Length: 432
Image 1 (cartoon, rainbow, N blue to C red):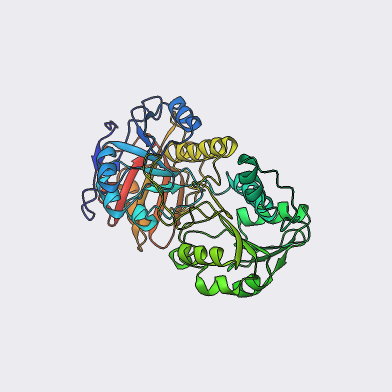
Image 2: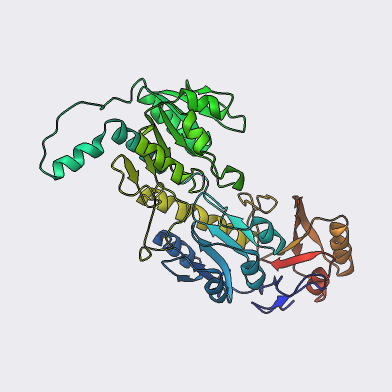
């Protein structure tokens, strides 16, 4: 069987942009000539890892808008982004060669996951790799704010020796309210409890309590209790303005509020009013509704100039350790997918943990299709027609797509690939 690397085939029942890719099994290394684009200054460890596997890596320090991204994706098989680059339906439909997207961060709300699935593009992220860095910054900012160090630092720089203890307190014994008890929230809980804080948490999903933390029944109850509130929820649109004017009023007088989750979670204008009025004694905000795409664009916020506010430029997970961990984790998952078809940690594909394909003995056929009845039956009929000896076979589905994998002997009719492409509801077919 002779297939030309980079040659594309399209199923007749899908639009031409839904590309189907094959490579010659005889070629080595596996990833030769596969172009990868990494945006937003992703850690050099990712570049090194991908290049070490023979991938052609192009890097860009900033994010790209839709028009520029579409142009940049010409010929790109693997894309790496962080939080600023938006992956829209139009981008996915135009990216004919794209096989996989790596979000080198926790969140994936910048990616249209449904459209990715329906265009046969697997998405991977790093849900755990920077949780410690974010949790440590939360604790540091809590101590900074509750000790009112912002006042002391400013005064010392002005030459004023202010040793007063007014409004400077310990964190021990204070009530910490955590909104969202996932990977980051639970780590904050552990660190805070170790410092003697009383931890309360609220999550819409039933979560196992760690240590002596106390689960509360509602968000409003949490806000009534807490001296300090820290937010760790995802970017779901339903969380927009989760903390609004009404919920700020519910908080205890002199509360400290931290948001290191998503920029749209807190009504910034309302927070600014309550900071100026004294209801909120201090705040730390790392994420904003509108953020610059790079360091050259200006940043503006209603919270600027308020002395009791710590503003940071979305750096909660920006430590060397976290970024290197993310670079390794996401790059390895992208390589696993390209190499073996494994989707075990994908956020949008049916999850299958596959061993590496044995190039010397077999071909591995990967078939992505819409999740409708009868597709696997058609595939197996094609195997029989083309004298295919199937050594192992897998199928997983989700709400949108099915993902079928078959390891087969190398001897079969040349018509096999074309027949697989013509299966009803095919999105992409690939061979590794």
